[in-house]
Structures are given as C-alpha cells and as structure tokens.
Image (cartoon, one colour):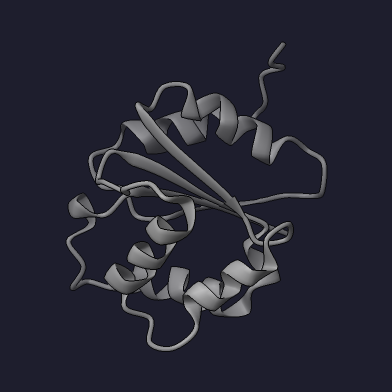
Length: 126
C-alpha cells in the first residue's frame, strides 16, 4: 500500500510539464524518495531504474566525455532496453558517482540539448 508523501504533488507536476529536464530529489535517508518515484512510474509506459549504490560498475557509463547520447547508449546496453523520450529513467543513489552528478548538472544547465528528445530523468541524492 502506497502512503502519499509531500513530494508527490511536485513530482506529478514535473511529470505533466512539457519540458523534462532532470529532476533531482533531495531528502534525508528513508523518507520515501525512491518509493515516490516508483509510484509515479506506474503512470509511465516505460520505466527504467538503475541504482549506482547497488551497481557501482555503472559509474563507468559516465567516464570519458559527458555526451548525453553516448551515456544513454551505454545505459541502454546495460539494461538491454531502448530508452526513448517517453522513458522515465530513474538513477537512484547518484551521489555514489560524482561524474554522474556532473553529467546531470551539465544537462540541467545546457541550452543546446533538445530536452524533448531525451528521456524523462529523475535522480536521487542526499
């Protein structure tokens, strides 16, 4: 049974917005950030979750240049699934990989990326 959280309305508002730049969820441990995202994922046709704490080898995806298309391609190879603009991509425990945080910040502040062509991206950090 899902217990509604204060963050739900903000996450839903983000999901309904036309432009999906990355959303960074911050909060103390065990407050329900991951559960809130998993609940939101039920409204998406396509959902991929990766956890950089449980799968530290995934940090290699972010090594080298920070080209988003290359990073997405490497995540696709890892999960054996195509990532489309309709995909909700959840990167849990992103703080475990500082290079992933840098890639996220680059995407957040970039003006040259066609955000509508990228997957919806939610990350979690402390």
